[in-house]
Length: 640
Ligand SMILES: Cc1ncc(C[n+]2csc(CCOP(=O)(O)OP(=O)(O)O)c2C)c(N)n1
Ligand SMILES: CC(=O)[C@@H](O)[C@H](O)COP(=O)(O)O
Ligand SMILES: [Mg+2]
Image 1 (cartoon, rainbow, N blue to C red):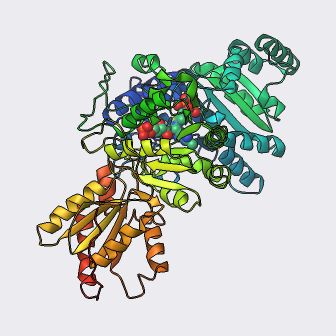
Image 2: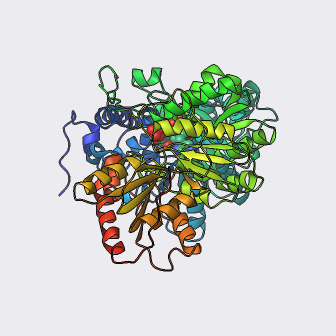
Image 3: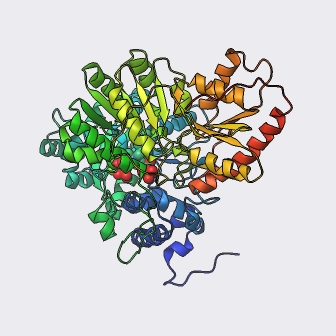
């Protein structure tokens, strides 16, 4: 039975279950469809929150790509994937969009397990060209892959990995499409020489449409004219020098130009192609157009006014505490400087940037460079604070090991978004930094249990010049503890006992101290006396404290906001090699479970991870029951 002919006034979007449905649309229909998709994005994100500006900027581009290419056989790969909301709406997930970034809902990024139209997951930037080239070579080797298209932003293309891929694509000379979505914005305004180059290049937009529409010889003439106007000396753009056919710049909101350019390029080119599309972040929604940085990631908002719903703050925000404290320290110490990889406001270094602009460096999305640049600053005698979210720091691990730790250079690593972060889900979980940093000789690793501890750890990092030092703290608010006027320097490798008990000990590393104290209260009500200690350091370990806890309690439980192989593993390693496991010890190591945890609220995610206060209490009780069956030496508790 054929589908009944829709009434002419039926919204076009109501007729779209998947991209194949838009193949029959006229070019005018496609423009109308884009307008409907834009309204849908605004309506959804007003309800759910999420990445608004980037998605609004690629509405026409998304419709045109699905109209011209044959997804999912043609592989459309979005870089970062935060701009994929129009793509998800058009690929069968329109209804599901209201569950965006929520527990058991759909991801805020592209995700292979979610749809055949998501051939490659993302969320960390600058991976799309590599992936698209990989798929293209799979096709060349006989796999059922059609065209491959990477859509990468002007911010994401500042990362080194993008050039590794461009370099290889130019070498292989196989057919692959790179769409450079140039909205002249990263999260903040873009930085770097490349941003300037692209701005210059995009000034030649009028030539692009002309060029794409002309036959061979005339097209060459138009290209030469463009190059003359844009001063791309020697005639070739950077991308053409790397072996790409460069097409553009094209107005990314002009549907006819987009369709014409994509159709012509798809029909005519054989090797690697870069299509330079100029868009506006937040396009079509005034509040987002006028403040593209503030509307990059939004809370729920009033679609009429654009007013974002403010979350009620019960305690200081860790990031703000870091930014302000570092600024205060920098006022006292001219050797302090700060580095961010395109996240000035996210990391809080924008606070110092306002006061000491010449000592704060935004290197673009370039975490590898950020780390070794910081190493150079340290080698020169500065005190660099390299502020990178835990999950993004994964991008610079060899630089940490090879350029910083091995040379014992005093770089300070500021690791925000440690632990589970909530709506950004598994890709942004700060789960692994404790493991990969604590394993490094010369490294010192701290975790703040609360915002007051963070202030002390910053002071400690300022004072510590004997090698690299890292401190981590979670996304969001602290616990509302009393704040010190000024940070004091902590004794390296020394933890602290928060609460004295006699039966069992909890040794907490980082911000789960709060839940550990709650667990102790729950156990106290059941007649179990619990010592709670804050380790403060995973390297160097406070072995005296560990010895005392083991000697004076029937069982020991460690807990950390991180994956296996972190703090608890190092405690176990110490206990084993100091012979304290030989006679048996009731020891439990609480970490994140050995799996990735999908997006939800942080509370829901920690519940999923089995790390609520009641979970800790249950684990402690189990360890205590086992421990009571074992003999143990008694010893006087250490004076605190
Ligand atoms: C490795 C890595 N570093 C940092 C980020 C944080 N981040 C997400 S989107 C973004 C800006 C991307 O800019 P662009 O590629 O131009 O996309 P637009 O938002 O302008 O559409 C940044 C820095 C990330 N996702 N991955
Ligand atoms: C898409 C991306 O990677 C960033 O926008 C990230 O979502 C920012 O995270 P915060 O909201 O924790 O700063
Ligand atoms: Mg951009």
